Image 1 (cartoon, one colour):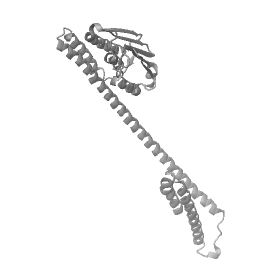
Image 2 (cartoon, rainbow, N blue to C red; image 1 turned 90 degrees about the vertical axis):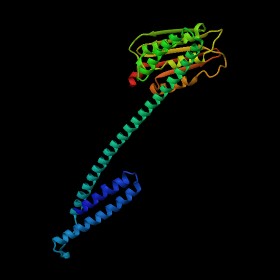
Image 3 (cartoon, rainbow, N blue to C red; image 1 turned 120 degrees about the vertical axis):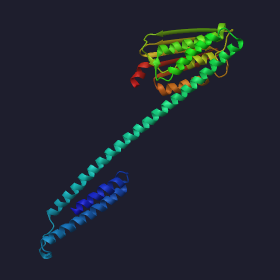
Image 4 (cartoon, rainbow, N blue to C red; image 1 turned 45 degrees about the vertical axis):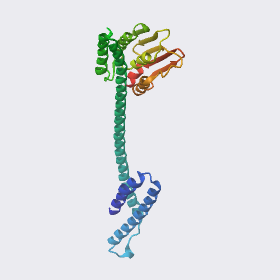
Length: 307
């Protein structure tokens, strides 16, 4: 019994946790051999003294160690092996639980960072958009234009969308389309006769949900960086949507070698797309001599499946 307890104790509290689990296999093998040799010696010694005790320490009458010794060793090491296996099993369960806990914490942290980055990107959209719009209103106010009250009303609608809809994870596609229409109406007041906008939309289902402010950076970019040709800024916008995909296209006139036509808006939307719809969209931007165009396709069906 003492040999069984001692050997088992060394195995489950020293050899397995300090060497085997930590993948220190060489030391584990060496110390396991040492333990085996010492335990065999202790078993033989205990059997000898047991037989001597039964013979009243008359050594000339002590029975020889026979098959019983092999049976005793087998029983002892069987107990050691079973207990060690249970110890390993318990360690594996604990490690699995710890790994699962660490993975869940990692995923939670990653999700939180993703949410924070999305909020940061949205915060970039709001001041950028408001800055351009307020600049326009400032110019109209200086001219004391009659369109100023109407512009304020349009801006009020846009601010309502920014404050109460943009923080939602998704919005109905019709809300996004209406937001684009309000923005175009505001820009038409600014450009007056120098603007030619063709906005076509074909929404085959009204239940489609998308991330808010998904298209407006493209629209804003066209108005901000587009240039007049023959005194007119031409912008073509089209949205085709059904239950499986959304196809958004926009193009604007520009002059060759015009300065930055991307702006922070497009860089912003690219980062948001990678965060919200990874591997679920196609974005092609073409910058020709006289036209700047964006072709954007989003696989709604795949996005819903991933959610």
